[in-house]
Image (cartoon, rainbow, N blue to C red; front, side, top):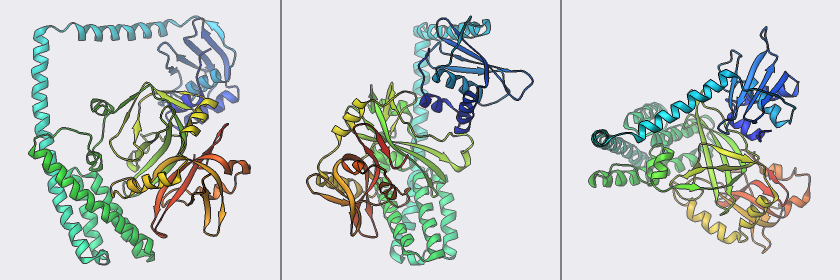
Length: 488
């Protein structure tokens, strides 16, 4: 019997509804017949459906990763019937032995022939063809360099426009940023798109949104938030102008591992990150927390996952961006309750919790040894972690949170609220970061008090502008036997 997990099925599903419907078909006994090949590479089922005839569904494991096919009219791939067949395998249902159908064998032969032809074509190129290819690549490289140079110059024009705007706001104060002027700034937000500056565009839009909210309710928190956005915008403009100017002067207009490339709105390909030496091989990652946030300024939803590297204890972050306009086409990510083992992953440039990304990964169940490694990686010094968090968070362009694993003695209530205390007696107030789903209240709802003593916490350090102090938002508690998620 093939080994496949529910996490793998969820990763394959085009959306959560398809996975849920597939699970229901399996649980309700939707298959009237189940078959598999003697070599365990092919599975097939006859499934009842809304049509006059039963649907014939199959899963081909020739390359290890199942390829699902179905006779139903659905345009989803895999469809709910294909996913249901995989759930039958997970459930350990009994499959009768059958021969692999002729049409499947022909599809396999065709695939192998196509791969062989591609390999032969690549290896059979002669010197003349190679020289022609080199010349073509050189011409393309020259053309690409010219295009990148043009783009950088256009970005500098947009930054100069934005610099003047920010200087005017700093001189006159945000109090003048309202009424009729808001319409002017909204137009400028749209205009920045013509300068290839989606990063600054998002920040300016966030500034406009905060001032709009301030005009509605006069809540000072929006004014404070606007100041923070303005500071970040000013820092980005100043550093980016220097960065782009130096690249043009040195005629080094290609990509580099400078954080500003992404801050300006650049999008990395995995191959580009690998070329910069940012690949990670043979890595095992356990997800400890997951949440979805609404980025109104960027007009998108963001699926965020926190992962611990089992070999180093480093905490990485994954982001899945889903623009409002493309929600039908981009699948929402979901919680992973296993250990991801990608063949290769790549880390983005930056400070603090680096963003990590991969294309495909095997998902295996969490074992006690994995939890032991996570607990051993936790820091026992709150003072050291606070110092590291301050160094990261003081950078105006850094993420607003710094996630770390911390060993604690106990968590309990004090006059000022929920507090974490280490075994050495160091303390820090817990809280819910602005814009984050609340998790502190869930700490008080934990059914077992032992979870609040002598355990390991995954927490996010953040600066609380209201109290002007560093706080820690609890994300999960790691015990010797389980991961208790407060955000999932």
